[in-house]
Image (cartoon, rainbow, N blue to C red; front, top):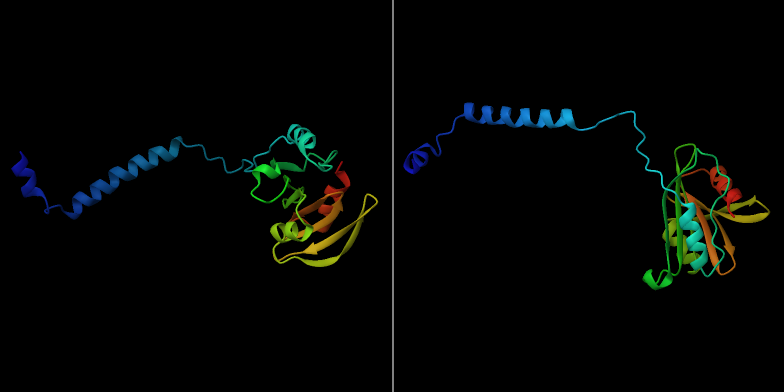
Length: 178
């Protein structure tokens, strides 16, 4: 038996290869049939952020801001608070990301690192772009290479609202911060 398989080795034909490929193709096709593939499903994974915000507010050494009263079209997609002891020199950091009503990205970034360092980290190539008055505060506009931001100093922390969202949507987010 072993001698017979040694004699067959190297004598495979194109027909053998085609049959092998057909067998693999059938297995892949059957696997595809059983995998869920709903083209109409929403790919956005929404997260709950209010409990995380309440917890982070207790631990943050600055007035931590999170939105209250945004419409249901604003969908939170990421949330996190990193204390300075765990942030490898990036200070205390709060992050809350959203998909906006227009389908763009917007995030609340708050930290007690120097303002310029936070802006350089969150808005690549950022340049001043005027100001916006929102909720009785003057927010500085920053236009980056691929994103934009509204920023304001809040006590010992810098608040940066950033993303691909328009300044108008960022202002809507700023209006909701409490």
